[in-house]
Image (cartoon, rainbow, N blue to C red; front, top):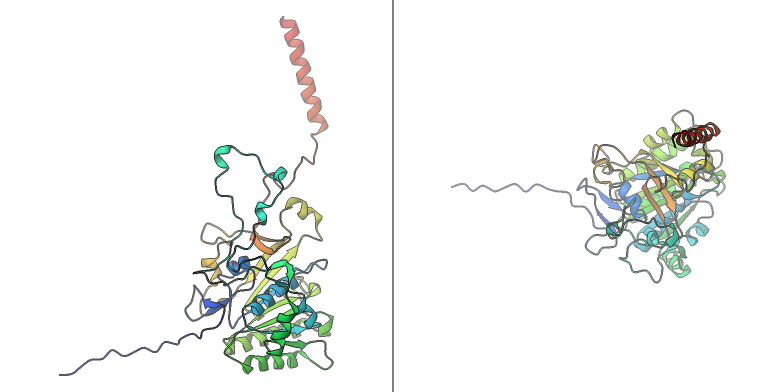
Length: 379
């Protein structure tokens, strides 16, 4: 009598890393938080390991691209993950990141600033509608089962110096000075490769703020694409690393590297997003007073899947309905948040800016006089 045994199929088990979770789109992908809960939603849950994400901030009067990188570093530092910061004055950059407020509990909601508005700015509505749920333009925290996936950082708080010193002593934070003499982009890639190979038991966050600035020398468009594509290849070889990059404002415009520059950047990386502030355009600021800029998505990471997880799992993008939502961002006193683009209750302005035409006033006056004369003749 023969006995039959079921052949066990070998499944590759994912390693367990701190502050990571399995992607909702693929069991082969681990994701980690960017430090901004609403940005995690746009990415479909978080930034996948082995992927790179580029932010372009073309406005020279603001530094929102650098602010996103500080969230990325703060999340890694608080999560016990390794960090490699590439750029100029990297120690000062890390020392200026935001931190968790002492009065903030770890599983608390991101903020309650929406309820802190002045009473005079609230719209008077019928009493029967006052207890209805307020219209939401963004998402809350994405914590599950009490697990703090995205930590509640506050812009008004700064990281304690002791935390940074301890992380540097334990080699959890490494600096690569791109402005050092004789350090080319190929050598920067070599330094990053060494960090990826040094320890594979802890995720490595690679942060590159201001790529293409004066500290990088005379970097051409071709050299930029070569660097980004080489970094992308390095990350694909090491499944425990991820990178967040912000371009310098002068090279974040669509025409800097020729036609279709941002599309080229998107193909050289796993994801590319443009955050355009309203600082240089007062007209947009008056139309959208509740926002500080627009968000344009060029490409999003999609490891082990044919389509980005964001297409199915993002609440803000809203692709589950008839069309995609327009996205914007705003920076409040406590946090940076991405949300859907919308006009205010009064259509973007608080008063009528264009007075009635003179011809319309004259016609109204004439009609009134004729009606009065007609009534006098009648009586």
